[in-house]
Image 1: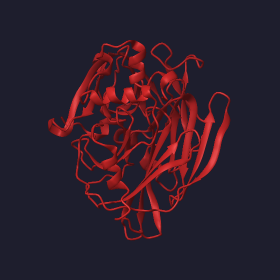
Image 2 (image 1 turned 180 degrees about the vertical axis):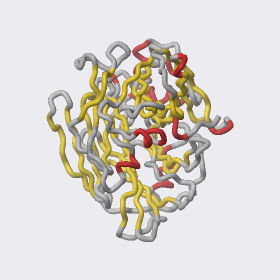
Image 3 (image 1 turned 120 degrees about the horizontal axis):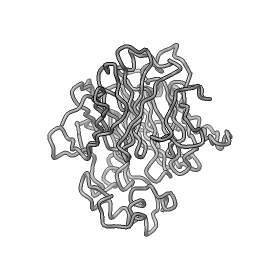
Image 4 (image 1 turned 45 degrees about the horizontal axis):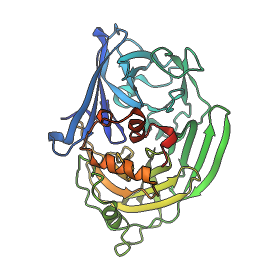
Length: 408
């Protein structure tokens, strides 16, 4: 099954797409999971139809999914006779949607047809941050303005009942190589990582959005670039299952026998970050290039409490013309024991990726945590955890949505 790249969002191993029938007041949301046994490497997990207001004007191109958090999916779209960029907010549980638009007129209409804005939604759905597309941020004279959204009731989360009314400026100066994420254990804590252009240090800042206080602010040295043997760069459309040992991937990623010293001068090309499902680990992934145009992958696993580096993997990337310039995509396995780094390919017809790196997540688990890993490993690809004959509390525990037992 193939889908246009521009219409999908990659969310921790799953792909989301939105198609619309604006004149009928319905949108269709599809979630896909990677399945190597299927043509195109994709299988449909679920398809939902949501109802909402009718758009009288013609929608240009397909909506672009820019965010998925819990039961909310956010997609941007452009209509023919309006200069503002519009957004769907779709509630998958209620099967309804509402529409809001950029009242600040900050986002460029023509650019929004081809590329999605960067969107961050807090786990409790109280705060949404909208940033310029990555290609715009890479330009020399880009704007540093960041937007947030206004709600009918500012004290309540975004929902079908409490809808968004527009956009307003947010207290954040955006820049290139600047990454944002909400801590899944503390939904109102916004964490930012800012890299210098040489990928030698990272400015870490954690800020509480309720009290507007800075909790952590430190400079994290990223150390020397130590590279292991080159990788093959074969195209893969499915994530390695949890049953395959993490130790095998570690051996290929950090082999001391095959290590060598790369040139000293290198520059950062792109970067991305992702919290693991438990929330105790942050994966930071960087793509750097040296003066001879040799590309390298740098993967850092950070402790999300101390923001110290607990594991680092570096390896060269085999040069391939099919690789896209978009940031690498990070996902964690369903049992949270493995992190996978993939690079999108330059393919207009499908959403294909090449797997660059797999690594085990270093953590000590309690007996309860080990049982969760065993249950999740036993599920087939695309297995529905919610269909298991278990109490709701255990289902939440397996889905990492029970905050009381998240870190066990």
